[in-house]
Length: 193
Image (cartoon, rainbow, N blue to C red; front, side, top):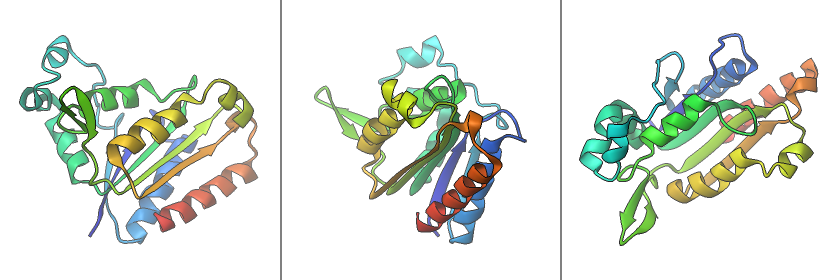
């Protein structure tokens, strides 16, 4: 059974992001995926990189020790799905901290002669499900940092056969019908993942 790691970052169980996450998990399981749901807030993930972790950053044996369980979950995944709201043109701090602490040298990339080589090439499918308060134009004018991070950095370190960046823009003015339509779109996309 293929394994998908769904990393979810929102503090409120009643949020639209929670509804998106529920659809992602339900549809993946319905399509035969073994889903490992990593709810960063519910698990109490500490996003703060300590001074000792930074000092051991290039030592694969030591750098993974504080987040060993998360590294093992990442290494076991064939698909990675990130579900989060876009706040201030970025991902929530807890998710950024997860990436800083778990996407380490020897895990997400390998340094060879000072050059970076991808380390998560076992992840064949990569998807992001997010929402923005901004319109597509405002996101574009701001450079859309979250999308660039996914389509450039994560794409490079994973080299997925399939990449989907799924965003509901202008969330602050989205109607109930638009929100429902986006949930339906996410269901279809997870069916195809």
